[in-house]
Length: 308
Image 1: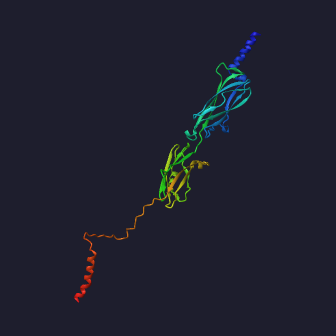
Image 2: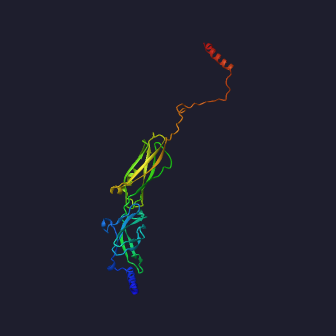
Image 3: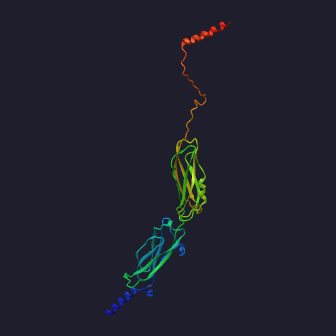
């Protein structure tokens, strides 16, 4: 009896220590691929995350304990089970949550492989003393195409006068991960006597690589009769790539231009302009007295009568 008990324990230990598929069955690690096709990648969201479903199918006659490990590309982080027990004949599903991928830092449609590793550590509740069985399952993660643009308008350095204009620099930056260009432009303001030119149309002719910018000038002109007012100028641009993909990606920015009354030149004083100059002649001789004046008048009266 004693030797029979020892032999039975030894057999049990051997079966727990190493896989004997012919006696105990087998177990399998698998991934639930999109469209049930392992060649179809998992699409990472714009938030840098994706959920991956995988499973362990235990066809053995005893329960098994599995430890998991994960390798995530693109600098992502893995959040999944570290270990699990799967009963005999059970198929158990799990979720691996991937997060923290900076999708803006990678080119659109980039693909890299992730790996889920499963290692058998216990069988029937007893640890595997010899190196256990391990299985790997792999799949691809795919970076999404992100259309994203930004627009910036420089603020004017100071107010403008009615009858003059101001130049505003407008910059469009591609903050997505794929080449893009400006699709549509809209400029608006809240001052009816303020007009803008078509300078921004040149933005629509240039392709913009990810992380690059294009810029041009917008000229705003105030009418000579424009009153004193703060005018808000808004610029809205849309992504051409997003429009062609059936989406919508619009960026907006605004600035305020202060319009002051026109500069008035001082009027010239015409009060002396039309009159002739008057010369004043002065003499240093003494003025004649009253007696001298009377004598001269009397002499002039008497002089004709003497000649007659």
